[in-house]
Image 1 (cartoon, rainbow over the protein chains, first blue to last red):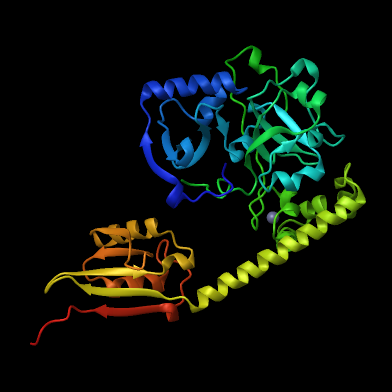
Image 2 (cartoon, each protein chain N blue to C red; image 1 turned 90 degrees about the vertical axis):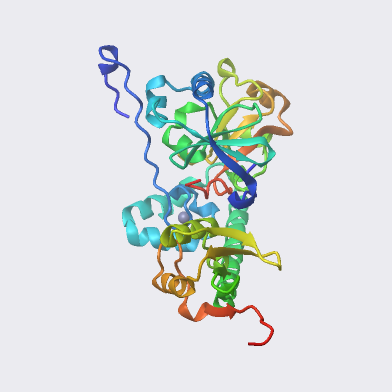
Length: 184
Length: 199
Ligand SMILES: [Zn+2]
């Protein structure tokens, strides 16, 4: 989504967000992410109002004091920026790719099932199945921090069963053009 | 990280953010430098900065452990890939530098009518200057209008109201605000006078 992103041409404008919308955003964050209200308050204090940065292709980036915090494409799940995820890695469920897949991930490619189901990969156990269409943190074999964030294309149990084609669509990754934007 | 039993008695505490150390050179978390395009420089910087941490990532044992489930063949391929990427990045940086050395920032004083002038500034972007930010800086400095517009060739330039060319040259020379890294020799001042029929 941010393989090629140029603020000067891909951002159409910045606006403040109505307080009713801010409230529903906050509620959505609490329901979609694994985060308690106290921690969310640290990231985005209630008294601070967030800025909506409108971008091309219906991408909305939400920023606080110029720092991008999370984003959304249409009505897709809310995605933290990779830097925010590094600070609070527990907010999204986790999948892992093997070492061989890392360079593809950092080139923006979608993550194929075999890279997730192989010995170096990681998918949660059956009782913690992640359904399709959910935001996930993409970790990598032998690395401590997430290398990307994606949205599951099929459930993690289906990834194990089918074990071919795309398992996770890549949304953000280390080194994409949003990674370079620390202030917006 | 340390678990306490406090949370049962008092209000729930927010979880503090994890501190991730990012590479000064490539901006990735240190463990991902090997996938960037500047590994040699990343390693040099870390070795100077924090030898202990350097050993943590690049000692013989660390390199062995890192292999994980990747076959030696695949690892060799990866290293080749990284070297290729690095060479490409170096070539790109060289080309950019060469381009910079011959690029010019043109500051033009344009006569609008007898008393009014505007000043156009062209070519800042080649030196990595954000034009919008630079325009804002000019507007604030001179308390006047400044905007990014396209010139007749379709290139971006900044147009500042008023004759402020000398001041802008000075700002660039001093490297004020966002106007950093432009050598004096690359600044060209020109004047665009309206042609007048006779005196
Ligand atoms: Zn690095």
